[in-house]
Amino acid sequence: MLQDVALFILSHSGLPWIHGENFFVGALPIKNILGLPTPERTMVILGRVPAALVGELPDFRAKPIQVWNRNKTYLEAQEDAEQIFAILHGASGWSLPAFVSGTNYYAWTVDAVGDPAPLFNPDEKRLFEFSTNYLFRASIP
Image 1 (cartoon, rainbow, N blue to C red):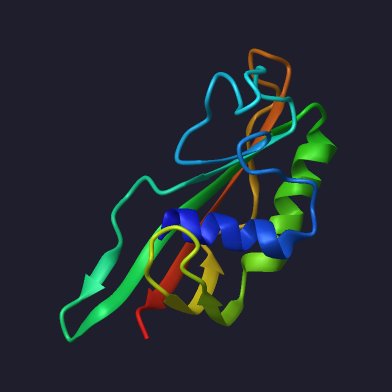
Image 2 (image 1 turned 45 degrees about the vertical axis):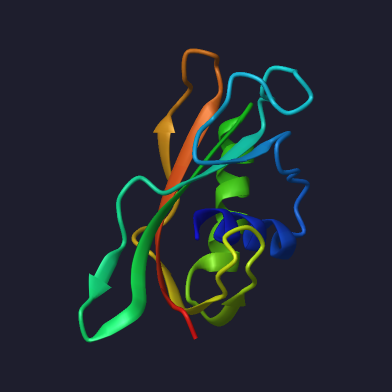
């Protein structure tokens, strides 16, 4: 489900994110698919905790997802996080095509737990990092 959500974000953002070059799923690699160090402007979709399940609804999941990003200035990193926030927070009624998982999910609602927040200002590489946590409430139709 995590990769399907990530590819859905990519296909709906209209932003210059390229999967494997500056947009990653699950972890931030040292090098991208081109064999180059990951760029300053980077986004990672993370699923660090398991989804909550409801016994009466066996196909339902409430999946927490973290969107982490960085950029060379505070304002650029904040803008990247805010653009994804505008796409995801409060969204409802999305079909997540089975890009990778082979399972079609229906996203009932997507809510941010809070607004995009800075993590490092700056980090050891002089880059600014932001994080936003979302809850995808989805089921298999």
